[in-house]
Image (cartoon, rainbow, N blue to C red; front, side, top):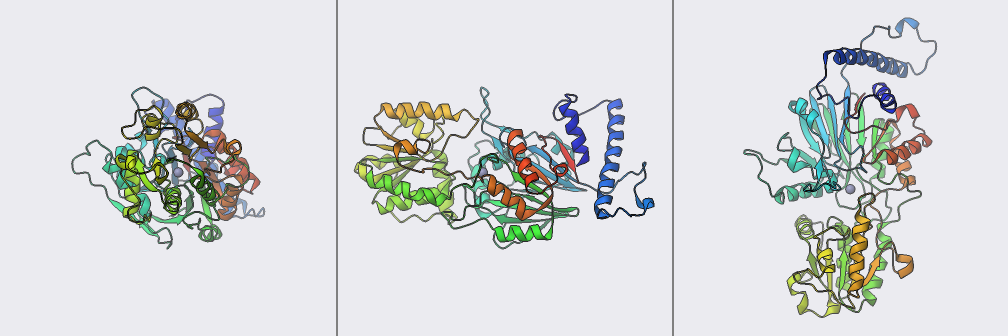
Length: 508
Ligand SMILES: [Zn+2]
C-alpha cells in the first residue's frame, strides 16, 4: 500500500509518466538500481505497517521487536494490478491478482467507446501478462456485459486458462466466442467452469479459494468474486445494486456478504460507475406499470429499444405483450443471439407461438405487434437506427407507431448526440416517442432504471464488507474519488483507500 501511495504522490508532482511502474517496461541500469532501493525502502515500510497492526497499537511493545532500519521483507506478497477498468468510466475491465506462482484475472472486458477511425473497440494492455503467463490459473468473470467479457476472445487464446463464472455468464462467454468471426489459434479450446452463485461453493484455484456471490445488476447471473488468498480475503463486487424487488426476485445475497464481512476482509474492490449519485437506485419493478400503461393506450405497433442483455426486463415486456394479445418480433443480431442463449439456458419463459419472425410482422394487425430491438443508444446500423432512417429491410415506420427507448444514453460516450439525432428522425416519421428522460413531460414512466447502485447502496456494501483496505474500481478518477470519500465516511481510514490507475501495482 505504501509503495503505491508514494508512487501516487510522484505522479501528482508530474514526474514519471503514467504507467511508469509497468513491470514489463524496459529500463536503464541507473533506474533499475534506484528502483531496487525504492523497493527495499517500501518493503521496510510495509513490514513496519504490518508489525504495528499485529501489535494492536500496544505502545509498550518491546522496542527490540521493532523492525531494524536495514530490515528487508522478502515474505511473499499478494499483488494486485488493474490492467483495465481503473479509468475511462470503467471500460475494458481487467484485474489481476498474483501470489507466488499463481495468478488469476478477474473480468476481461472491452472498451466500446473508442473514437478512432477503423477501430471498433479496445482491450486492456496485456504486456505484463506476457511476463507471468506461466502463473495464470484462471479467468473469473463477474457478469456477462461486454465491458467485462469482450476482451476474452483476444486475450484468452494468447494466455489460455479456464474461464469461471455463473451459468448465465458462461453462456454469454460461449456466445461471444461463437460470434467472434475471427479464427482461433490452432489447438485453442475454450474451457469453462460453471459456478453456483447461490450455494457458496468454493473452488481451489492454485493457492486461492474462489467463491461467487449473487448480486443484482442489469443482466442475469451477476456476481461478486470472493478470493481467499494466503494473505487475506479479497472481494470484487462486480457491477451491482441492492434492488429490494428485482423482476427475477434474485436479490443481492446480502446475508452472505455480511457473513464474509464478519469473517474479515483484507481488500474490497468496489465498482464506481455511479458513486456520485445520491440516494438509492429505484427498484426495477417500478417500471413494470409504465409498459402496461403504454400497451393499454398505443393504437399501433410498439417498438421497444433495449439492451439485449437486459433479459429480465425483456421478459417483463414479453409478459405485458402476451397480456395484451400482441406477438413479439425480435430484431438486431445481438438481441436474437443473446435471447436464444437465455431461452436455451432457462433464463426466459416464452409461451409457445409468442415470437414471430421480423419478416412476417406485416401479416399482423398493427395493434397485435411488439418489436423488441437494439438501438437504444442510437448506435449506427442498429435495428432502430436503421428504421429511423427508413433503411430497414422489413419495417417502414409510420404515424400511430410507438417507440419506447428503455435505456438512457451511456454518459461520456457521445451516445446522447446519437440518440438525439435518431429521435429527430423518429419524430419526422410522426412516430410517438417515449423516453425515460422526458417521462415528466410525456406523463409516462419511469421507462428505465440504472443497473448500478447509488451512494447509499455503495455505502451499505462498505458497511457489510468492512474491509481493511479499499480500492474503488470500474470507474474514472473522479467517480473513484467520490467513492473513496464515501468509504472514509463509512469508517475506512483514508490511508487505506487508494485511487489507482491502470498498470499501477499494489502489494499487500
Ligand atoms: Zn455491467
